Length: 539
Image (tube, rainbow, N blue to C red; front, side):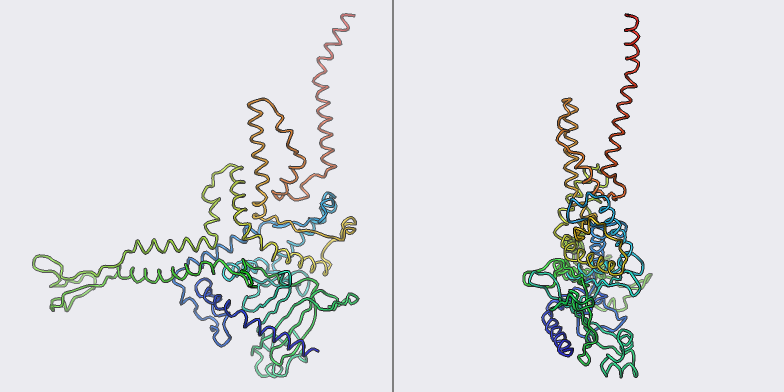
């Protein structure tokens, strides 16, 4: 049985490897020109670069490489900014969200998530940046989320060359194979030596640094035994297989899928994503060739080619500074040495700028100039610009929220819950079986929601102008501020603890009404006293 599992997993990886060879050729082509540190990592081991070897031979212009860095920074700043809490958890039932204990519990859970996610040992921030780099360059990225050996979370951006994945009937990724190397010494550290194939044990004694290939397979468990409390009752099966000896080393399981795989865009019938770099690859290639030509032409301008008549007059012509060359001019002062005309450098620069524009458009560099170009704006104008940016970025980045960040958050909650790091659930939420939804609160999400707030502000501006002109305040009767204010606070990411409960709001309003009534009585006291005095005199 174990041998059948190992054979099946190895055969499937071989099929998946052969089936994506065309993608790997494109990835290699992009890596050579956009992200050279990954050049050669998609090829067979026999053609891999050596460690430390230079990999920039085909990279003459850095526009695409810089565009990828800016793309990654923009994705991070709009989706997962390190200096803010970019999502919130809420009950699926909106009625439960009105309960303050439930709202505070979800806020506590959210705080704990960010605490463990951004702890130094988790390594999330750097790995998420690698994910965005892979998305921009290759269109596909993979994050592995697991628990630390002690407690907490651990993240690893898995190189695309190592992972092979499959979709289910609904187009969701539910199967992942990771093919990776380990030395014999590392293998003995991870598994008991008795489980390793004979050749690895032999290498462990003779050359412990010799590398072997292994496969980690995670797929839906075919037969879930709900009566079992161990891995046999978990949703996903996990297998580690040694390719050397074709041996199953270990079997375990996961309750949630540990690989968060995201894609930039996909073509019909394809599983792997396509990237901005793929879209801009023709422009990247052209720009590199133009740069080579411009370098040659620039060299000729600075150090020109000389043309001379072959009459023996200038045989000893010297190009050293301060040299005197007799016979270089005729008796009447006409030059006998001429420079070879070069091409039009300005035209070449213009052509290069055209290709740079295309590359920057593909990597969304120009899009993020929307707010930079006009820094002096009113609050309404800022909301309008944010709304425009949110509309433009929604198709591009919205997929990352549903395909990568959502499964990642669910995986994190599962791991922290199993480690006993989450507080007890309120009884009201427990009755609802703890169902929750994820509300993204990143700058991108707020930009997308800004249209609602912007519409309200425009309406208030109009109502104010109308009332000032006509003296009629009735337009404000249409605005339910009690409904609008909590929503605007949510758009602006106001923490739950900073909000007053409905009971507190009612108490503040009652106190305000009592103070107003008392002030009215105080203001009316002189008039009442005067009236009483007058009434007394009249009597």
